[in-house]
Amino acid sequence: MTDISPTLGAPNLPAHPATTGRLHFADLRQRSVETARSRLIWVVIGFVFFALTAFARIGQLGFGAAALAHDDGAAMAPPRAEITDRNGVPLARAFPGYALRFNPEALGGSGSPLVKTPEEVARALVQIFPDLVYGVVLDKLKAGEATELRGRVLPEQANAVQALGEPALEFPIVPQRFYPQGSLAAHVIGYLEADKTGLHGKIGIEETLDARLLDKARRAEPVALSLDARAQGALEDELARGIADTHATGGGGIVLDADNGEIIALASLPSFDPNRPDLALNRLVFNRTSNQVYELGSTFKPFTIAAAIDAGVVTDLAVRYPATPFKIAGRTISDSHNLGASLNVPEALIHSSNIVTAQVADKLGGQKLRDTMIALGMNTRPPIEISARGKPLWPQGDWSRLTTMTVSYGHGLSVTPLHLATGYAALVNGGLWRPATLFKVDPAHVPEGRRVFQAATSARMRQLLRLIVVDGTGKRADAAGFRVGGKTGSAEIAGAHGGAYRKNALIATFAAAFPMDRPRYVVIVMLDEPQGTEATSGQRTAAYNAAPIVGRLVPRIGPMLGVAPDRHRDIDVSDLTPLVANGEGE
Image (tube, rainbow, N blue to C red; front, top):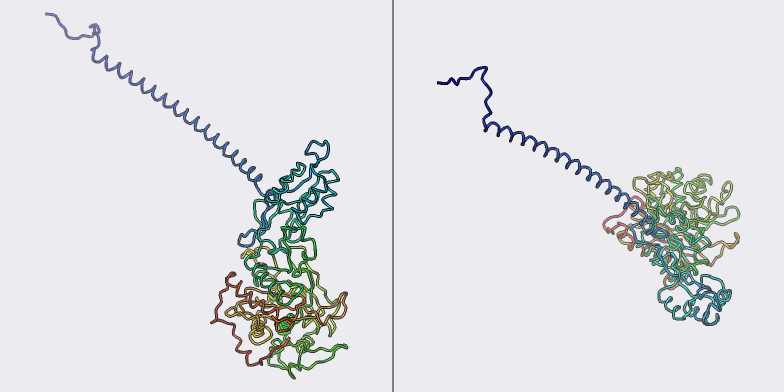
C-alpha cells in the first residue's frame, strides 16, 4: 500500500483549478478599476479644461459686448442732452432733421447748377418758406457756392422743394433742437444758434450748460430743472390774461419754493418760440423777470417793518403815527389819498401808507435799513443759473434821511422781480434768505442760507401779510382755502437816464405767499405799464390788476404743488384784528 501522506520532501502538486480562476478574475477586475479610474480622471480633466475655456470665452464676449454696447450707446446718444422739467416732461430735445442746402456741384460742375433760372428758383423757395428773403436767397444762388439756405425743413416742405426738380437743392441730415412745449419757459430754456463750430446755446440754460449738454459722456443723461411745466403753463396763461385785460406792455412772474429756493415757474411776457430762433433775435428775448430792474414800490414796506421789529424800533403795534404829509429835504412824503389823521403799523400796511412807513424807517435809521437790504441781496445781481441777471440801481454811499425814507416804500432802489421773490421767501419762511436756483435741490442738501429776520419777526409778518389780503389792498388776491398773504406795489416809472417820473406809467406788482399758516411758495406778479380798463374798473394800481392774477393763479397751481384748499384753516390773526379798521389804500 502506498503512503500518500505529505512529507517535507514531497514534490509540489499543481494548484487546484478553482483557485487559479479566482486569482485571474481578481487581477482582471483590479486592472479594469484602474483603467476606469484613469479614464474618469482624463474625462474630468477634459471637462475642466473645456469649462475653463468656455468661461474664458464667455467673459471675453461679455466684456466685448459691454464695450460694444457702450460704444453703441455713445454713438446712439443724442447730439445734445435733453432738458426736462422736475417731473421729466421734455422741454428741449435733439433729433436728426433735414436742412436745405444749395450744392452747385450736384450735376458735376458742368454748366448751370440750376435747371430753372435763379430768379425762378428763389421765388419758388420764398413761396415754400415765407420767412426767407427773396434777395438774400437769390444772391446765394447766383454766387455759385455751396451754402445752407435753411436750417430746418419740415417733411411737407422738403416734398415741395423736391417737386421743383432742382438736383442742386439737397437735404443733408443735421442735428436739430426741438422744443416740444413751444414758447413755454423760453427765457429759462433759451435756444440754439449756429456758428462756425456748430449749434450752441443762446440765453437761458442752453447757453449756461452748453458744454455739459454737448459732452459725449453725458449726452444720454437729461438735465432736470426745478421748473414744473404745469405751474409754468398756468403762470404764463394767467399773466397773459392780465396783460391783455390791462393793455400792459408786458409782465413777469415767479413761483418760488420758500424753503429751498427752487424756481417752480418763471415767466417773462411777451415771449418767443425757441423753435423759431430766426424770430427770437429781437427784444422779446429780454427777460423782464430776472434781468430788468424796477422800483417795485410798496412791496418793500414789509421789509422795512420787519427790520424795525427786529431792531426793537417797533415793539407795540398799537402805537399810532401821524398820517399827514410832511416835507423832508425839499420833497413831500404823501399817500395816494387821505388815510386819516393817524395810523398804527398794521393799518399802515393794510392801507399802504408811505407816510407812516417813512417815519418808521427814519427811526430805524439808514444804516440798519441798508444792512437789511444787503442781507436780502438787493445790492447784487440775483443768484440764478442764467446770464440774464439784472444789476440793481443801488444808492451809493451813506443813505440820507430822504433816501432811507424813499427806499422804505420802494423808491430810489431798483431791483428785479426775482430779487423780490427771494426777499419775500426770507420774510415768511422763518427769516432765512437763500439763493434762487433753476435746478432741483436735494432735500438732504438744502443751503443753510443766512438769517435776515428773527423767526418771531417772520411769524409776525405772516400775520400782517395775511391781514393785507383779508382787509386791505390785497383783497382781490384772496383764494378761498389757500390762505394767501401778500402786498401790493404801484410805482411810477422813472424817465430815461434818471429823469422825472412818468406820471402816466406804472409798474404794478403783487408779492404773495401761501399758505400763510405754513408758507410753502412765494408768488410774484408784475405788470409793466398797465392801463385802467373795464376789466380793472378803470384803475391802474396793483390792487386792481396784479392782485387778481395771483387770486386766479394760486387755486390752479396749489393742488399741483401739493397744497390742497382748506376753508377750515387759517393763520391766527386774532391779536391784530382789534388794531385795524377797514379800508384800502395804495
